[in-house]
Length: 293
Image (tube, rainbow, N blue to C red; front, top):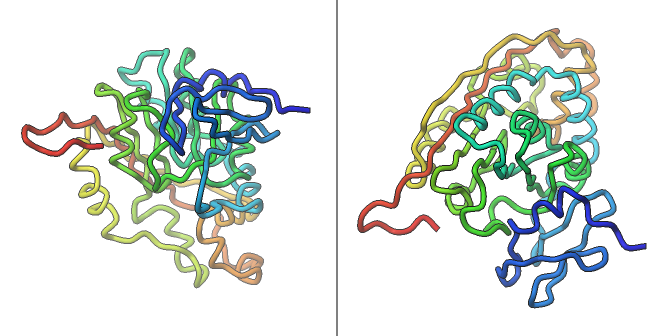
């Protein structure tokens, strides 16, 4: 039996362009989307569409990481971050907006923005098919597609009022291309104090590079200017199970052994949550400069 076109994906078809020939006009064809040139892309029974072609991207979060993420985010320990993202995204944004979440994971932050904008539609992009299964169900107005952030996005120019990048890799040139001139890019990244209590608890814990903030500003500057930055910082009490899920959903999980994770004496009863959330405006083309495409 063919997979039915999910309603949220139907809402987003006009945003898409074929990743093979870059033609707009993907349309349903049985259990797939087809472009006018005949390139087809399967719609998974879990509700997302796979647009990746050619050399495969990294697989992203595996099944264990996604389960840990689902459990941890369901505790709403990160709700203040989601609220900050939604507030920044909704500021001066029309309710009937298009929101693209790049590196969307399970769709937790995208769903928060769509709740704040009742008339908006959303599209989440991620390489992890395990995460996309959750993202496709995260909100009734959120579609999901498999894509690699480091490639040219399978989206037409200037289709989004908001682009989200929350704890995800960044592609500033593509962010700028798909945003409308009056749109906003919301970038969330950890400070050096984020989860600091976990840093010395196990040898495989990933730490924050002190130069990361400088690299972000240098990468963004040709395409965007910062409009406002908010710091979200608080102490979160956590059970041992929640600590393990928090560690298990991060890249650190790939560097820790089972013995590290199961050491009952290794983990504290609380962590510091500390992130910066910046809303960026697209820069106007500079006279005589190159186009940001």
